[in-house]
Structures are given as C-alpha cells and as structure tokens.
Length: 89
Image (cartoon, rainbow, N blue to C red; front, top):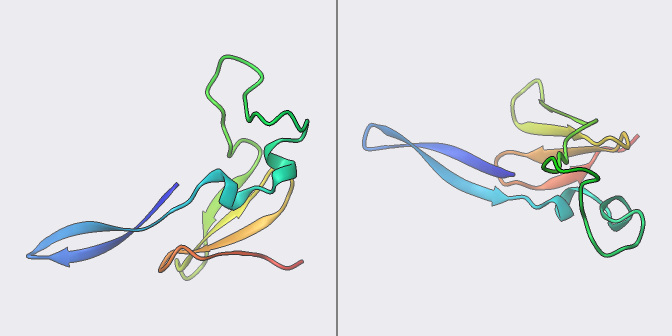
C-alpha cells in the first residue's frame, strides 16, 4: 500500500510519497504464517487478497485511513506521515 500526499507545484497537482506500507507492517507474524510454514501463499490460483474479510475507510476528518483486519483488529494509518497505531478496544 502506498500513501501519497498531494502538493500543488507550478499549478499542477503532484503526488509525493509519504510511506510505503508492507503487509508485515499491518499483520503479526501469527497472522502472516498461521501454519508456521515460512511461506505466505494463497490456497488457490487467484492472487492473494490481503484485504479480503477486512475493511478500509477514512476517518470522519479524512486524516486517517482505518484498516479493520479479518481478525477484527483495527489499525489507524495517519495519512500525513504514514504512522500506524493500533486502536485500543
């Protein structure tokens, strides 16, 4: 996942990369490899869908992207700098 910030440069809108987020930034080792095989793979021939069963939405103030995993963990991604913090329950 890539997080960009828009800047106005010479009258044109330009996207500036804030952070590249890897699946390892979002999932724990247990979630990445539940069978302890050392391999993250799909069970069929379709591409892995890491977001399947989860959800992504913007916060009311559009400052954060809220990712709810299929395990019901909630992570807040601050769009200004890409900081990831778990939501406390």
